[in-house]
Image 1 (cartoon, rainbow, N blue to C red):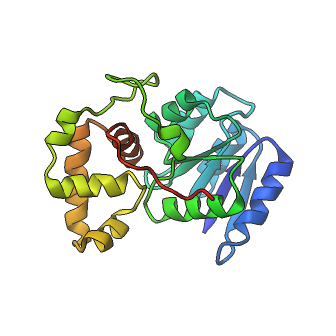
Image 2 (cartoon, rainbow, N blue to C red):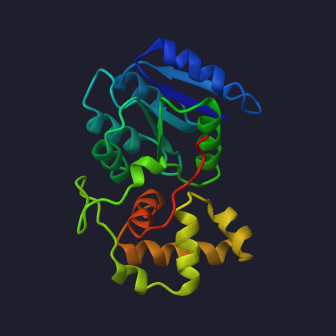
Length: 220
């Protein structure tokens, strides 16, 4: 597995490289210290499996940098935000732009590894503290907020799937828990995204939190 670490602090990259060495393999790590380097690496390397991205880097605004990375990376390559900032608005904006999750830099190595494994398996990790109930109608970052009417439109089975999505679980994990075929779970997820008016799993996790469903619990 090849992982791109994009962060302008060499000390943090060194520490993250040490954490990643605990993966089986271990993975091949590519480093970038600003957005232009990260974009160049994404264009140059054809087999990157995941990107760990600090939003506060030189070269361009984080919004433009994330948008460009999402443009040049294959759609199935997750980008996880790693940041010292816990600004909920920025996190949700990143989610809206296609980030697959958010891991605070203050997380323990165990939480970070668990979160990475979750995302690599097709799940989503967002810290529970960032999934607190927000304003009704729409979020400050422009994310639609699901209401009770959306929940009422779901079948009982789809509600079960949504609850597990809210825990960040992958389709395979949901299929195992509910004893369903993975293809059936995919159909349920598609219907849920449509009902909640969101276009990816990460946004579905946010929507699930607004409906009072628990987020992933990886914290110590």
